[in-house]
Image 1 (spheres, rainbow, N blue to C red):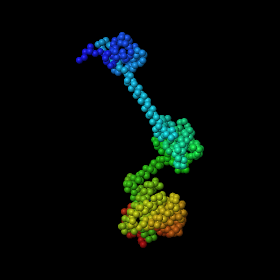
Image 2: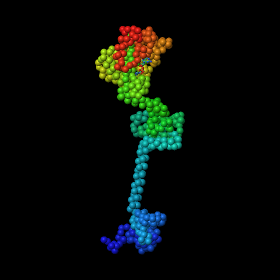
Image 3: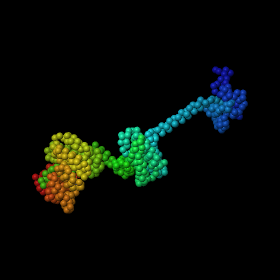
Image 4: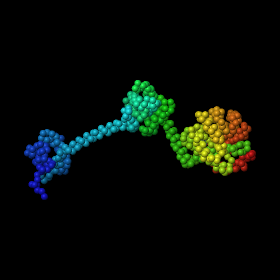
Amino acid sequence: MYTSNQFSLDTFPVGCMITDSKRRILYCNRYLEEYHGYSTDELLGADLFTLLSKASQIMYDTYLVPILVRERKCHEIRLCMVSHCNTALPIVVSILCDDSANGKFFWSISSARRSDRLFEELTETKQLLEQKVSLLRRISDTDQLTGLPNRTAMAKHLDQKIIEQKKDDMAFALAFVDLDGFKEVNDRYGHHVGDKVIQLVAKRLASNLRSDDVIARFGGDEFVIFLNGRFSARLVEESLSRLINKLAEPFEIDSVLLTLSASIGVTLYPQSKEVEPDHLIRQADQAMYQAKLSGKNQICLFNVDNEHVQQSKQSELSAIKAAMEANEFELYYQPKINMLTGRVLGVEALIRWNHPSEGLKAPVTFLPVLTNTSTGVALGRWVITSALRQLQTWLQQGLDVHVSVNIDGYHLQHSHFLHDLSNILADFPSLPKQRLELEVLETSTIEDVGHVYSVLNACRVMGIRISLDDFGTGYSSLSHLRDLSVDTLKIDRSFVQNMLTSTGDRAILKGVIGFARAFECDVVAEGVEALAHSQQLIEFGCECGQGYFIAHPMPAQDFPDWMDEWHQQGFKKKFNRNVI
Ligand code: C2E
Ligand code: CA
Ligand code: CA
């Protein structure tokens, strides 16, 4: 055990001090003497405040004394001591108040310099970090080539503006600018010149905007411009035309004069539905693409209504794709017969959709959306394959039958049509190809008659029969007939339906039948709904017919029984003649 005589407080490596309630210094150890430069003698009996800065004196009165009175102690309080030579020394003090000794205060005092230095260092590091972060942020928000804000910055700006819009009911337009023919500039003059063009374009665009507009470079030759304010379609086009005109003035780069144009797509905000910034950018981008398609160097306004149509079209297409995978499509077959002899010439395959909730759907409810789509082409391939498989089954069962399938104009014109057809046929090597007939639809949409002619010719060389469907409805069918060699004409059912009442339609019917004869092709009348139709058709020279009077389209499995019945009684019952 140590006794107090064996050591002194002077040897302690912290300052020790005792004061009384009147702030008089009663004791201080030598450590403190060294620390602040006062001699112990000088300090004994002196006012504590000679050692404290003004701020610490206030702190002592207003903060420390109340705590000490209440709690009898306080720990690690920062104060500032004033040294003998008047320099400020930061200190950390802990104070105990001893009751038994008439309210004396026992101080331990240590330097806060070290922690202060640490603090300063930390502050410096923090400032450096902040500078770095803001530099990084600037770099990540800035396009390096042009110094303009980049895609990230524009997305943030739009986020901000959309929030503001909700509060202040403001509006804006968003334009997507893409230079026309920039790739050629790059290819012809090199990337060095290309980069300069981009810089000059950026400058020219930026200098022709108002102060509250914002332009960003999205990469390559794409810029996006935020135009503040409420615009009508006319107003926004006017503002952007000015930009297009400015861009049309030549650029001089390394003594080369270059003229450029741009295609601009623009969309307006707010819209009737909530839209996210990246959705707005996509809209402007799509409109820009339209501007390119319509011949470049122009402005195209995004059509929101169009977008809804597109979206519902997309969802219909996905539903059809899913239905194909789920095997929900089925071919029904409708017989074509010779109305004089009763002979069954063949069946036409007609697609149906066994929809799980809507029931059996007719082609008119789902085919139009497929026009010019890859799903439409895929479904067309499925139709041909299924019809051939069915034909093969029937032939194996000993049925003497021909099958025709409907082919849309866009499918026929598809670059893979012949290739796909040959592949499908290769899967049915034993099938006589003469038993397959293609009914070509929508002949008026055929653009490249030369191409279609060679495709149909190739089909005929393979042995496949060709018929022109809905003949008489498309104004160009006659000219096609001259160019395309076909086996059969199918007279559209609209003429047949009105033939009993309309002399005009009767004249057309006679004319079509006459054409068929002149071009040496067969003719089949669609839509034979009554005996009277068939009688008049036969009179006009058209013996072949198809229609509800003969038979409705039916599932494949019903056809063999129908055929049996037809030969035994069906034809006789309806036409009052025996099958020859
Ligand atoms: P389309 O090629 O003119 O086929 C004849 C349509 O007339 C069929 O309608 C048939 O059910 C209907 N029909 C047959 N007889 C009569 C009748 O006596 N009176 C009346 N009012 N209608 C009759 P469906 O099956 O609804 O097909 C409509 C159209 O859809 C077809 O007209 C064809 O253009 C197209 N289509 C049908 N299946 C396919 C297919 O697999 N592929 C393609 N690309 N188109 C198809
Ligand atoms: Ca048809
Ligand atoms: Ca038709």
